[in-house]
Image (cartoon, rainbow, N blue to C red; front, side, top):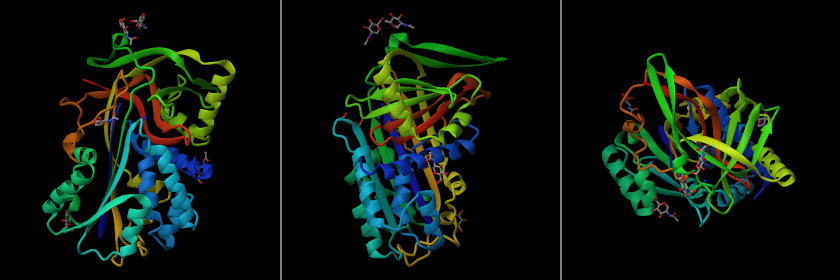
Length: 399
Ligand SMILES: *[C@@H]1O[C@H](CO)[C@@H](O)[C@H](O)[C@H]1NC(C)=O
Ligand SMILES: *[C@@H]1O[C@H](CO)[C@@H](O)[C@H](O)[C@H]1NC(C)=O
Ligand SMILES: *[C@@H]1O[C@H](CO)[C@@H](O)[C@H](O)[C@H]1NC(C)=O
Ligand SMILES: *[C@@H]1O[C@H](CO)[C@@H](O)[C@H](O)[C@H]1NC(C)=O
Ligand SMILES: *[C@@H]1O[C@H](CO)[C@@H](O)[C@H](O)[C@H]1NC(C)=O
């Protein structure tokens, strides 16, 4: 029986055990790398939400499925210790009264599914799932009930996360989580400094709106990574930032990301802090396009390439701690929309799981051409260096 996992996000406008946080960071960069590798276009993902959802499933598995989880997620047998660290990390990453950030998890399971009742309880108590049983035999009704259920528990989530009839077809369980993040830049761009940048390729023509700001920012240029790093602080409590990574000319985002796998993002943040303290904050000029990214990705292949394969296999998936029935994970689909504007806000009010969500424009581009200044961005919580969102920007459509 199929379990469907949807991870859906929108952003509008971004201590615990250090060892645990470093596992999340490692996973984040690896997942981003493997997702970009398998894609011929730019990608946007939310590694933290994939991490948190899969961690909640890890301890429900046994045998080889568990061995793969423990290897990919660097987990130990001591479940209660991991849960404790997970909760601490969750608190530092997504609990912030001054900031518009929220993470909600829902779990819908079929009336016919034979689950161990303590399995559901573990997901509710330890991983904050809001769970309910539905009748999956009537998929349209199940989708409607799921919507009502979400609306009664979390208005914002129900606006952006709309499950459909086919999500309940052939499935016995639907898990979804929804992370929204809305923040203003601490040093906003001035709209009057924004200007249009044109691209030509034969007869085809495209453009992007470039925003510009000159401000005192943390900046570091690394010779060995062949990239420069700029921190754009978000909100006003200094906890979140967008880390911009620009490859040196002649180096592409894929190669820079490959080098980032060898270092820790925390080390990069620390290095930038060190530079800021010893040399002071310099005036940095930042050019950033206005962005509207709507990305929908199936993450099964990148996760399989990282070593997590049995969980997707009808014959090999082993959820013995959770259910008497045999279940496996059908798809892990993630929808991310990112809006970057002068004031910083990134807003989305779309209906994620719907295909109508994908095309941004009615026109079909003739081709994609490389942008002049490609970059990678990470929206991060700084104390843990957790990656809430990551994306690449290297090509634009020309028409
Ligand atoms: C957070 O965002 C929601 C949805 O856009 C909005 O209604 C709410 O007022 C915002 N809250 C804060 C504290 O900014
Ligand atoms: C559901 O299963 C049936 C029979 O196996 C198949 O024909 C159909 O395509 C499946 N639908 C979905 C949405 O997976
Ligand atoms: C933005 O630029 C305009 C025009 O130059 C100027 O009048 C305004 O004060 C600037 N706004 C900010 C917030 O700096
Ligand atoms: C940005 O705007 C400021 C204020 O409007 C102006 O003084 C400055 O020349 C502008 N810079 C650029 C690069 O357009
Ligand atoms: C991340 O984990 C992989 C696999 O365990 C390891 O090979 C790699 O060195 C780690 N990277 C960092 C930066 O710790």
